[in-house]
Length: 568
Image 1: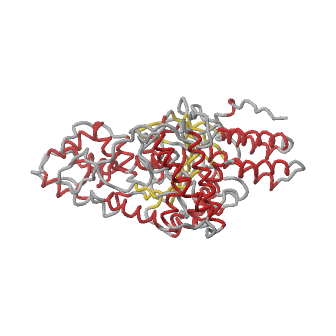
Image 2: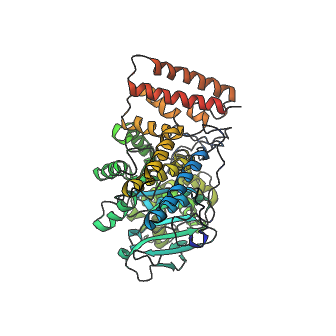
């Protein structure tokens, strides 16, 4: 007998595990492998400005290494058969544990989780730029970015039809908080509650960007307060339960021992398993590399490319993406008054303005008599707060070279910030395989429950969990992808790169997996898949291949067969 789930809409307002008001829509899978016809890729990002006085061509393309293909396609998510199978076993488990309230509640929470957008936690050290990046992803300043009390609390941001902020205390009580916006920012007021007494905040906000992912802003690790750091660790690496997030975006200003240690602890956690497939690293505050020069992002991209090639980093995350978070946030929330102030500065004497741009102090100080007519020192100080010196240095030559309105400047700043590359990575690696990540989280959580609270029926449920985990090819792909990146399966560099690509390590679309252009025809896809299948079949059958390599090759052969079978 299958347990019928209760209607929990009444509890959704204060239950952070409930489905958001406007959940992401996904089409059911129709074959063993994802991927259908491609769409046109976005235009390449323009070249960065070389110097404040140098000409800028906003539409000029730049050749750069991109961690994830920019091309998007109409992709069928991981087969909903997996979610259906996981939902069925969870419903059976809920019936088995009906007389165990705590376990039953945890199982019901994971049933709800299957129907919610994929959960992505944003983590990193203090001052890594987590809240700023979250605002950039959402396109509104709804996460506090100062060092106030709210940055010490785990905060969930979910899509909803109407704004609402709920504070849940550690004692279980919940209260609505007032919604106050000042100067375009959402102000969070705890109504006198001490941060250490608050379990979490939930911000429901109407946002298309949140329709496909729920973002979780976490307190900084390696904080001066051990209690603050412990909140993030408890959320992502609890002792006996599956972590609250399906995936992690980890921000680091540079690779520090604390960063590596946290990621190692995250992947070594018993409930999650050792796998980098649900982690993306962000080289945050990329504009600060090279002392804020206008070519800082070029330097940041070179560093990120080097990091992506390091075995240690490869074993901890899928890719490393450089992002100038403040530039991205300001680009997505640019105000007309700010554009007007920048345009006035750009029209002034260039030699005088270039002298001001030598440092932040020079740019924001009071001007002596006889200086050009420029915005006040207070206005310039606010520009520095919003853009940073790097952003101001970038925006002024863009305006001089022909950008005449705030909309065009906004788009150009976002393109140059690296935000689009990150969004493409999140789409290709997380949201396109969101069903798979959620099902994986649910199975691991159920496995934990079965082990911690064994019942006579547990063996039957264990067998079903094992059958789903080992029988679904998507799970097998995910496991092999993690083994390749951690070094558990060793292949020559060129074969490893092809294997990771075929397994969906850079995107789920068929043409991406096969290394083809977006406009590839079904016949070209079939020929490429057949060719790849033949190569990997020979490796599987080669007597010189080790057992792990032969097993890996068979998995990839099955992947190629699935691609061919899904073609018209």
